[in-house]
Length: 136
Image 1 (cartoon, rainbow, N blue to C red):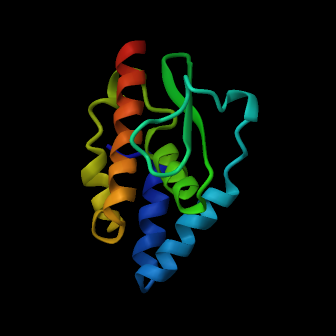
Image 2 (tube, one colour; image 1 turned 45 degrees about the horizontal axis):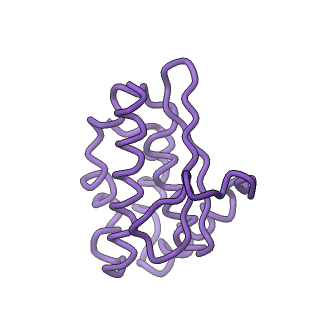
């Protein structure tokens, strides 16, 4: 049930030989993301449970989910970009049906992130799911 953007990331990961190259690719995805307006980096958009500073600002248009996100850590910005690829453009009612852990496991992220990063990633997923559930 992944979006084409996420499938493109999965295809790239399949092509890359080792985890260091994949890690660099995640960082590059984060660098390519447009920066979030600092005025949106407020307590209401902050994601609790992350070791780094993380903000997610939902944007729902025509019943489809989207968000802006940012972090003070480059790898986390990359993880936000991966989540953006997974969820952007999905109908709000279907966001909660995406098995994010399974999709991210396809990339090997579950095996290669520190426990703090994994906890933060779960917190971001939970925040996205809650936002979409509230909007549905």
